[in-house]
Length: 213
Image (cartoon, rainbow, N blue to C red; front, side, top):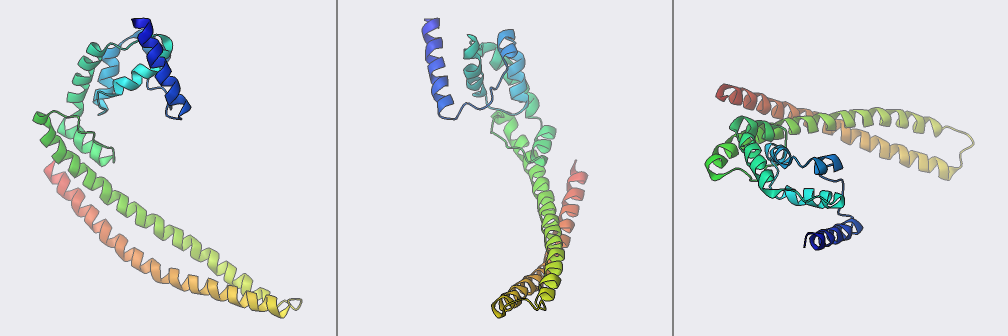
């Protein structure tokens, strides 16, 4: 019976591989052979993964003729999950922008959700500030490039070897560059105002959370 089961799971694994769904194995060969499923379960639990992660371990280990021990895995997973579900970890998980898979038991889920949302709010506030900073830098860099291109294009128009058509094209190109430059010059102050507002919100949020914790 065990041999038939292993052949069946191996066949499924081959199909997934051919479909491009295999990815990297969730556990190594040495972990499969060692059989310390309580430790593996604890690792998954403390990282907030669902217990169904065991199915991926099963797919990885069947290649080495090993079947994970579900009982010891679940023992470790439950222990790790309870560590994961602590409010302090919930806040850190949200602050890092990590996903919550709703693994906490009902007795711990409410407190986890509250702390997680606070951390998530801080993560999103920081991300908004960082995104605006990147936009401003990108536009400032583009502006410098445009200034150089406008000078080069305008200077090239005086080349006596240009045909009338080429000179017209250069004039039109310079105009497009100038229009883009004007648009970016108008955008930068607007983005800077948005950044200032977002930075104030982030600072207020940080102080609020600091006073709570």
